[in-house]
Structures are given as C-alpha cells and as structure tokens.
Amino acid sequence: MNTAYVLLGGNKGERLTNIEKAISFIEKLVGPISNKSKIYVTAAWGNTNQPDFYNQVICVSTKLSAIALLEALLLIENKLGRQRGDQKWQARTIDLDILFFNNDIIDSPDLKVPHPYLHERKFTLVPLAEIAANFVHPIFNKSIAELENECSDELEVNPLM
Figure (spheres, rainbow, N blue to C red):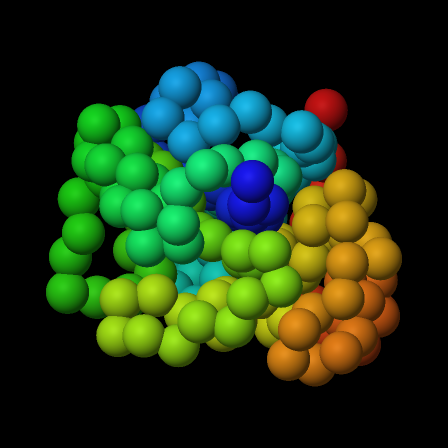
C-alpha cells in the first residue's frame, strides 16, 4: 500500500462543496483517507487578482502507482468542472496536487514529487504540518514543521471555522 499526501484547493463556485465532492471521489477511486487537515482560507498565490482559496491536505492510502494516482486526480478535477487554461494559477473549481508519494522522488514531464513549490507556500505547509509535522521531505531532509518555520511566504492562512 502506498501513502500519498494530496493538497485540495479551489476558489471558484461552491468551494466547500467542491472539496467535499473531491474527497468523496478520492475515497471511491483512490483509497481510504487516513487523515485530513482543517480547511484553510488563503488569498490567491501567484496570480493574486482572484477570490480567496479554500485548501485542505489529506493523507490517502492507495494501491495505485504515482502516475495512476495523478490520472485519477485529473479525472476527479475534470468531473468537478476544472478547466485548464494556458496561464498558471488561475481561478478553479478544484485543484488536486500530489505533495508526497511515499518517500519517492519523481521527476518526469508529467509528474514531479515532492511537489516542487510546497516548501514556498504557507497554504500548503500549514495544513500539511497539521497532519504530518514530522514527515521528512526526501530532498531537503527537513521536517514539514521545519519547512513551515523557514518559509518566507507572508500570506495569512486561516482556518475556515
């Protein structure tokens, strides 16, 4: 069985409903969720002229390979109305990013794991630290708690409730 940490996020449409639907699809298509963070609200990162995001990190157990997991997550995004454009960091109904897959390091054209920006983004590190503070990043050899402490991102990350 493989363990994956996945970031769920969205800032378009019914944000909370979209995250709940994505979790339901993940449980059906990917495997059981063993842990999940609170949902957090954060201003958009990168392209800042758009609505705030809701973000959550989950830990899922799966028999899928990393590439099969990516394909399942892309299918779920599609089912929930995600439309990919040419520009990065656009408003979206749902975004599902693989942060970690076991302790694997994957660098292929279609998939990069660990996620290449996770250490730069508080909206990823705060919910990830909530459920996996002691998980060690396989490239940086630092815990998620250490990466969160060192992160220079100044965006506020606040619990939804």
